[in-house]
Length: 215
Image (spheres, one colour):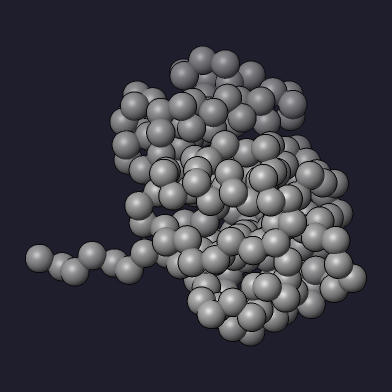
């Protein structure tokens, strides 16, 4: 039998200690493939922690210090650490600045634990992850069709090919509620762009037109 893969070593930095504690417990209870190695309230505490560097860091964008986010991201990148930013800001310029500076993901702090866990796994796998809620701010493409995240395209492809929501969730390793949330966001993105994909048939037709699936 193949040996089980090593857990993802995760560190969290957030100066709201109540949120820090809650995130730690949520992730521990939701994902057995993620090992919490550090949960600290400041940037210096992360750098001096005996378990640093970690595989992935959830980093609060709004830490009350004078250190530029770009410098933090450069430091983490130099150690081979991938970073997912957490923030209350949803401005596209802020999101793009973080991603351009080397962040592997960007989350709104109110996201549910399934989405947070997904972002950690995606970052560890080398993918860029943006919270779907925040992604709506970046979703418009030049031709007017919605810009879907990689995971949204996977959900759309499976569902449009006839899989029920439960099977989509199982195939992607997410909860059924999270799969439903993705479908809701996909439909909302298309609605905002002027496309009606309210039924499964119309969603399939649109997925074919956009190259998400083959006819």
